[in-house]
Image (cartoon, rainbow, N blue to C red; front, side, top):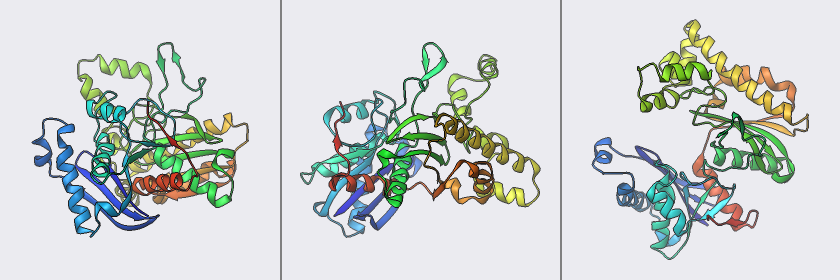
Length: 354
């Protein structure tokens, strides 16, 4: 059972070949910015990226015919339930046209679909960032006409939650979990018997600040800044996403570099990192409150879970709340393969994008 997983980014395409969940080969295919800038728009990059993935398969001595599962990273689609979806014409249309937004991840399903069709097979996506299982109460923001949105690290959060469920031999659908994904963006979700009923929007300014994002901000200060004449709308968006959080204070999003700064006696680095951990702890604690104590475990995942200057202070804040499981890293490629195997083994059912 060979599975090809594909995760496109703005200047790279991450690909891996698995035999079941054993990795045979994995590579980050870097794209020179000059090559990318030649294309008029995102969708015109499709053939270029398909050919690079084919070259990777040739180098790996793998034929397309030998691959059973083609799974791409889900892009910006309309809000949808968690699960694995077959790539269909409507999905191709929405991703190609950028109906719900343009992002490099939109190419994941399109690359997988093209390769699969060339050998008479089907392609799939799993748990895109737009998975929306939030309760109606959790969507109320406090201002009529603006709803809280579910945009988070659904793929990794769901994958580690299911891994934990297997470890304790209890179905995911019978567990109550809080999952904190700590990466370039930070999302903290309440998984209530198989559904993420509440989660902060990890993209648009909600929840804790992260290495690159502002998280929630005092609203009056934001609109004063927005109308100050100093920034355009696009510049304001970049302040929120890309140049917020640790970058804003310390000019780097690299937690390891910040740890080195702390070791060198940099007081501001220590204070800012402590503040980020403090906000993560408050987010976890807020979700714990609405569980009424009916919580099986807190799961910590993402790249920052490797950093002891983040992990240990966080555990000091939350270890009294119950069992804590740690799954460091954020391997989306493995999570895609994991979803496909669950589908093939009849552990989850195939869903339709419509």
